[in-house]
Image (cartoon, one colour):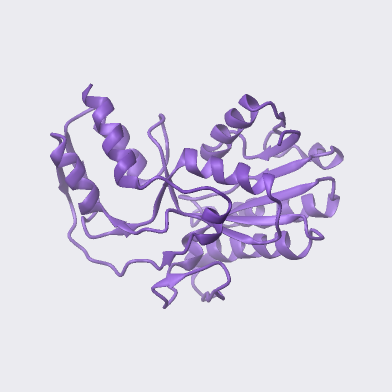
Amino acid sequence: MTGLATILGATGFVGRRLRARLSAEGWDIYAPAKGDKTLFGHDMGVVFYCAGLTADYDRRPFDTVEAHATLLSELVQAGRFEQLIYLSSTRLYDGQAARELDEAAPLLFDPADPRRIYDLSKALGENITLTRTEGRGAVARLANVYDWEPDAPGFLSEWLIEAARTHDLQLDSSPHIARDYIHLDDVVAALIAMSEKPSREIINVASGELINNGEIANLFLQAGWRVSFSRDVSPAPPPRSDNARLRALGVTPRPVKDVVRHYLEGLKA
């Protein structure tokens, strides 16, 4: 499938890679600049809503709400799109009591917790996408996305980038912290698959497996790197995100250990 794709957040981590992939496949790309409200007067085709804040959401709460929900509300009201794919996060599962969650599980938030503004604004964006788009909206809940391109965000991305510079890695984290990691290329494949099989539902774009830092560190040690951690805390792991819906789309994310092992082999070559 090709056609017109509108990417909001096309200069961001996911948006850049998605734009490159869609362009290579022959899509016409419309990538409005941040703050360009003329976009509401355009036909937008398939909208990939990649705009959002991550690391600095607590410092910029009002920008977070603007990016996650206000702009989305205006876009949906304009209505000039065929399909809308809204990027959310499996972070919404953090703090839930269950050990494993699928997309149908109800979510619980404490509105008095100031750090929940990220989750609440993403949840509002999900609600608008699923209930106010006349069946044209779907939600991609992304796990911890990683890559090694320059300035790729996130702990594992920074770890991999640093490994290309030095074999002596000192990490400000604990070996016992576990996360669900999914590579950026697998995320892009999932988003394109969602555009090819439109549905009004939530999809966990996740590996479905929790891996702790110590397990990843062992791969580095076996490949000849030295790894040390500054902390030794053992927080409760987040719930595991069921990814059966993603696999039903024909997307099976590569295990993070396989990707990291292959990356390290490339650095040694």
